[in-house]
Length: 103
Image (cartoon, rainbow, N blue to C red; front, side, top):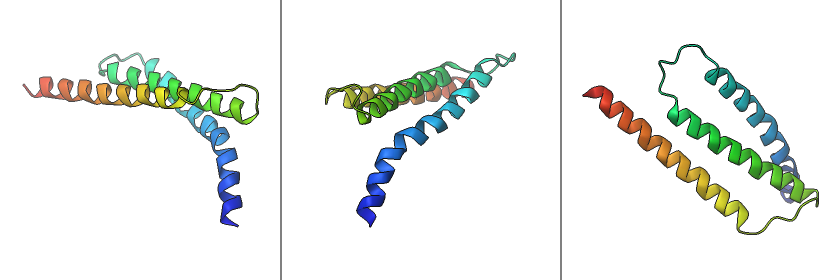
């Protein structure tokens, strides 16, 4: 029984991930369209780029699941490495920004 549940979730997960990330992208668009530019937006822009890469990865997963496209075995680890690198750089930028505010 649990094997079937895991299989079903594995098939459906990319679809609902795309639906949820669509909501996140709309919120980013709202953030970037605000008139007040007092916020430090560079880390948020990097996070947005990472989310767009995640969307591309999920779309490739869905297309591969539907047997429309064949993706190389190195593609997903490479994309996830880029995402993690962007997260680390974003956190370092934010830490540097907070340190400069304290001085």
